[in-house]
Amino acid sequence: MFGRLFPATAISAALAAVALFCAAPGATAAGLAAHPAQHEQHNQQPANLQDACPAASPGQVRCMALIRTDVHGGRGARGRAAHAAGAADALPTGYSPADIRSAYNLPSTGGAGQTVAVVEAYDSPTAEADLAVYRATYGLPACTTANGCFTKANQEGKRSGYPANDQYSGWSLETALDVDAVSAVCPACHILLVEADSNNDEDMAAAENTAARLGATEISNSYGDDEGWGMFAYESAYRHPGVAITAASGDLGFSVPKFPAVLPSVTAVGGTSLVRDPGTARGWSETAWGQSSSGCSAWYGKSDWQTGVPDCPGRVTADVSADADPDTGGLAVYDTTPDDFPYPGWVEAGGTSLSSPIVASVIALAGNPGDFSDASRLYSHTADLYDVTGGSNAAYGFDCGGDNLCNSARGYDGPTGLGTPNGLAAF
Image 1 (tube, helix red, strand yellow):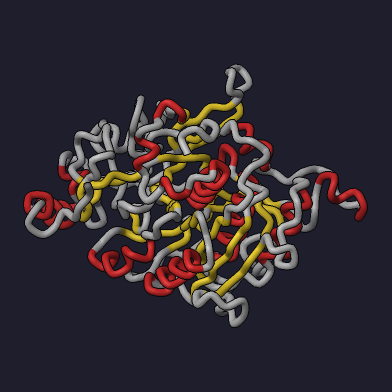
Image 2 (cartoon, helix red, strand yellow):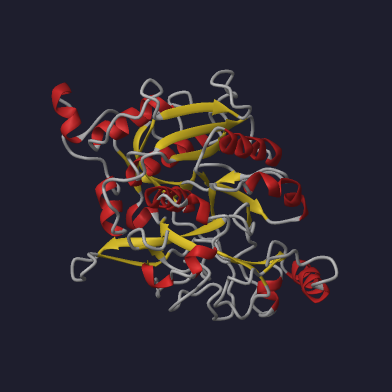
């Protein structure tokens, strides 16, 4: 069973946290306490990557989407879908649905009866129109309000009265990335977009509850903020029987675990660098993405099913992972809201904002959301995942002192969890 590490059950961890935060503000507590000399944080993001969303204030979450500023491809449908209009024939830069299915050994069918929800802040007024361009480009069946596949609701569950579009927040790019990722993995799944009034924790939790109430079988959350006392007021919003909930582990390397990914009821999804590797039977290879966040919680005790992390007494993120690195291959994404951020039309995007909806959609393909009241199912199916054994997130975040909290290793490790999907057996 899991439990909170406060107040009496982990006084030593709390004292370690105080000492560590005094020495290095923002450092994770129990995890780094084992390596008190290793406190330097690097956070040197490549120059060609830009955070979609700005830093958030206390009590708010930040979307985790990253966009490549050196890749942008204009507007409109591409590939076969573009022929009638005489537009450019070349497909957009970035991985396609076929690439994602190939990399993770996923079927091209499945997901009927499943509804994958994505919870976002603010309104993306062109979300449905942009989704239509994405799906037409890759030959996916239409997913619209009219045919019942696509639903957009505000945080109260109404199909009107959407929140304002904060055109400088970056959440429209996050929305496009999430709905395109769901489409790529599970074309037959219904998509539910729930838009919170703001990125405040309270509004995001309200939208999460609405997603479950409106019938989501899986909910993906591509956002987060540092774990802390305030998250306990919103725990219940991320715990719904029969609904699988995933969340991005973060894009800050080894650091403070992120809420809501750190919640024991949530499957925390880390990120990998995915590349084609024709010399292997799989045809692809992966390493831990240097920006993928991992962490050791100072607030939640380790669940009895989470194994392989001897240096942390608390909940460890991530549980599982998928493609996240925009430089080695992000997802091709179509977004035209707003026109001036950052490049309207086709872009290449990633971050653990990509890996979270990928994993939520794999769960939908498998059709077992009721098995994901937490991530325990994955820990009993490790042989059915691709084990990621190379790479580290210490160079971008904090140095964990050489162990598997920040360095990829055989079996479990913090940056990639238990590994990445290899078909549906683990899900």
